[in-house]
Amino acid sequence: MTSGISRRARVLAAAVGTGVLVPLVAAATPAAAATPTVTCTSAKAGLAAKLKKDITAALATRKGTVAVGLYDRSTNTTCTLRASSAYDSASVVKVTVLATLLWDAKKTNRYLTDRENTLAKAMITKSDNAATSTLWKQLGMTKIKNFLTAAGMTQTKPGANGYWGLTQITVTDEQKLLKLLTAKNAVLSDNSRSYILKLMGQVVSSQRWGTPYGVPSGVTVAVKNGWLQRSTNGWRVHSVGAFKGGGHDYVMTVLTHGNSTMNYGITTIQAVAKVIHKDLAAS
Picture (spheres, rainbow, N blue to C red):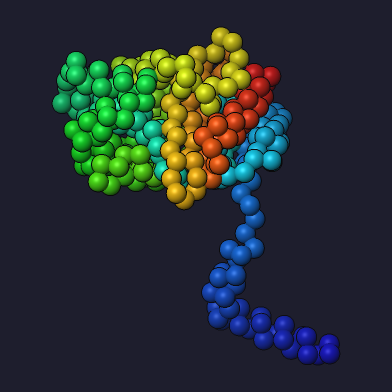
């Protein structure tokens, strides 16, 4: 028996050495892949471990598929969960639409027209779909794709045939966009950044759920949410936000699908947001 095992081991070793078994081993890996876990790093002692523990606990009993991104400049803290998983954007893409509009206007050294300002305000503050469709059509796919390239948002795929709400987005790219909005960069001018953040700070009260939940007093909030029900994966419910104050400067993205109702998705996002705000405030 012993010699049989050792002979088999020798055969396996030889096979691996020739590369014969490598494809078989690789093919077997996905079946054993673990559920993605929250990953956090921080320059602040103990903060990464606390965030990882609390975000994981907040999601422990929640159904659906959730992706999370956090970046705090003040403590150089980053947390991610399913950072590269693609989600239908719903209305979260409206921030990208406005950023593209301003980026394109700057290239030709022009201000937005009164009409564009009106459309932009309705699109962000009230999540107006008609205004978004008008701007999406005006910009066209080439300009939108060119902005995504300039912004380094390589994982974002614009929705085809005018279906901007089916744009594929990831936490990684949404966090890249939020970082562009909240710090000086070569892609968006300071005026463009402050204009977008101003409108995200004026979102109507009924749409200020999600990432701002549990934010400490005195911290400024800029938010844009998205929600969409489809026949597969139930409700998509997303929230992106930028927060500044209390010694912190951070951006947060929570994307979800597979929610039974819109409210279920909102509750999931808010459970994550609440512990993030709390842990950063205490750090």
